[in-house]
Length: 255
Image (cartoon, rainbow, N blue to C red):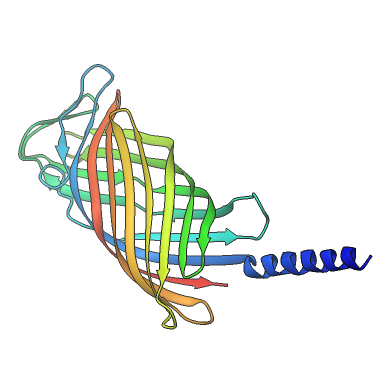
């Protein structure tokens, strides 16, 4: 009987230690990202691919501010993944006078016309992940499902040629998710990095971010870093080779 009680006590203490070490936690945060744009997009009309439109030279994009918010839930339940959701506003617009004739979605936009352009790559991410390491070195791994609900639009002045064409972007992409963080002992400072990446055939998407930050003893923190997003897609009606890259500043609360 004593042996059974001892074994039960040890098991209970082990379980209690496990729950205490892996208590549930919630993190919420937001950041503003200011990337530069480069690359091109092209859209066909179902029969012929349109002109490769350079974001800077043809469409007049330079940089813009974008807002990102996120929340994550970590829990002590074995085998069930942790959960993270991220909402990214990647809606940008520009106006430019064309320096050449271009074709977009079967329409021809002529040289010297002023064109209003919108590229909306806004998306919501749903990430399921596990903690591989959880001490002063933290490593998470899992899968992200990124849902795009955007549009690419070109239109001219209604008083002029009055042309308006768009390509709807409505798709979901699965991505491999990796995140690492190294805490600098006794300082509150840390270095972290996050990667979402996938490659399928000739298409690829990569989104990486690296930062340096500080988290107080009561969970309030901030960080500054650099994020690069690239999309290289060659599909039947949409071709892109885009890169958005720039600095960001973030605040978060961990409780």
